Length: 553
Image 1 (cartoon, rainbow, N blue to C red):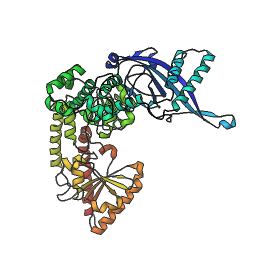
Image 2: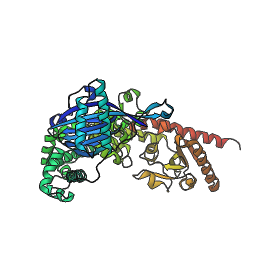
Image 3: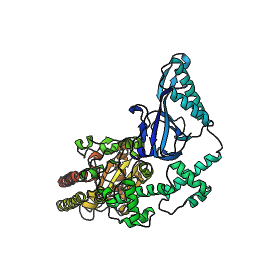
Image 4: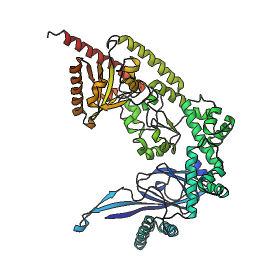
């Protein structure tokens, strides 16, 4: 049995000019403000009383106009992306409780956050009644009279009932509205293609004269302005990722313009600065990856993924000043609250969600090594000289390390780095930390032929079963174990399989059990620390082997 408790009813106005300043006009207290981006703590109903625009729920766009009802479950991220000259919204927030053991006459309640309706726009069967109930709830929202409180609850429950009765067939206006949403999805995917009112109207099956007016009403922008905004956002990402090295004429071509000068004028019109000024402007960065690289460049992000902040190789004082935003797209709400200018990630699959909040740089870990990544970040964040200095300094450290480590691992001997996940073994690519960059690149040790392509070429490595270790056997095996997947038990099985292979082939290899906390990270600060640790490990192992071989049999 579920019980619903009305928490708050409040009204807000938002103008296009205020939206551009990332603010909103409130008619209630600051604590109830509906920010342009907000992670919802309670079940929330937003009813549009007036105005038009575009709203995102968890990154999914929906157009709104008078009468639109948008629902968000707890944890959903609500973003007002665009709006007309004046928008008036009503927000109704409530909580839901599950009652247990009510048949015994006692019972207790527990708060729940399970989804009630899908996140996004709803299509109530009686939208006029929804509007009336919303107005009544707002009018008596702050009245403490007991009779009014009773009426409030009746109206609130009627509203929930109406929202649960979704419309079945779409009416004409809704069909046309769906066509505009289809057109927007197409524009976001094909922003660099030529498009006109006529071509888009034909694609969605609407008259072109209606489409032009409907698009402006729905988005608050003309088609030309809407496409220009998307193209300028994409131009920002290209500028940052290239460090300003790509000519504006080439960027213009990539985003859909023929003329770099025209793109420059559009860029300044929409951002208030030239592309060169934008590159040099300090930015509020959220790091979903590459925190160690940014640290070495002297850039402290305003927020970072929780796993990065757990990295003990980074200075504690540095980490303490950075907000923990969680992991992946589950972090959308906390990221939005930080109002970043730039989000940095390594996962292409997260780009669409992150880019609804701020320009997003995707630097795939499997494609670039540590020196390339710090170079890309240095170029993007006006720290190119710092990046080049680190790359040159690290090259000197590599040369010194090579001299000190001569003959520690003999010529012709092979090296492999494995990470154990349950019964699966992952051969680590040289771009994925675990000392792989030092062993494969800095010291130029050679993996077995069967692993060479998987661990040296761009990619994410290779996975195989424990019993297949013989195909990938190396003279020196570096082992990382993920304990949460029954690591110790499977480690014993893997070592047993290695032992059987060695007995069968009359070979004796060296096995190194590695500490994930010490050797896991692959960023600049960690690599500098790992050089001395790796030297000590390999030399100590070599001494132990020599001593054992010298003992009388």
